[in-house]
Amino acid sequence: MQSKRHHFGPLLLEYKIEKDLLTKLIDIGKQMKRSANESLASNMESQFQYEPENIEWIAEQLQPIFDDYKKQYCDIMYEHIKSNPSSRFTISKEEMKCWKLKHQSLWINFMKSGEYNPPHFHDNCNISYVIFADVPEEIFKENEEYVGTSDGPGTIEFLFGTNYPEDFCSRKSFLPESGTMFIFPSNFMHTVMPFKSDVTRTTIAGNLFFNMVNLDILRKENENDTSD
Ligand SMILES: [Fe+2]
Image (cartoon, rainbow, N blue to C red; front, top):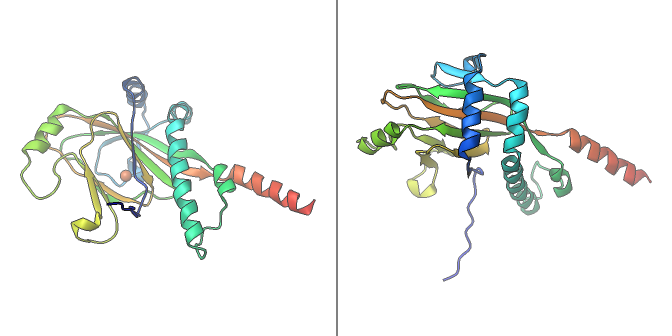
């Protein structure tokens, strides 16, 4: 039996980050001193912003992942525009190629027992990501022993739409291991459940925006071409 799947909704992609890079990201993060708390929705005490020179280096390491996400995101957008002529997006495929994901902000979280992140999304950016850099074994054990109807301690949950039945897949929950990275549109609602174990879980999160400088240049070039 042949079928064609028509799945739609926010583009949530998962990647794996190698251990060496995770160690470097954590080592740099541990040196950071500027608190990120004021700009975040979470109930966590130890969250620190990376400095611009660190962001530049980290962006270089993660750029292949950002480029892959951007390509898939643009493919979907292009298909959407093609099949919806009245779409508010009027951008061409050539123009999309000139987009580059750049950091708006980047921070490290040291999540401790009882801390959590309520349902929220990220403002003033286009794409966000989170890397689970160091997840202690105790959290997996605690989650396994959890009795209840939610997905349990230490999970991250993405929420889409209203409270549809489960077969609409309006919620997707994960208990990520060290090295797991999720990238998603910034306005995709998500929440992080607390854990009780006396351990620290380290995550690194960033906000990205589509750099439009190149797009402006391309538009100018196109204008010049037309006038010739
Ligand atoms: Fe978040």
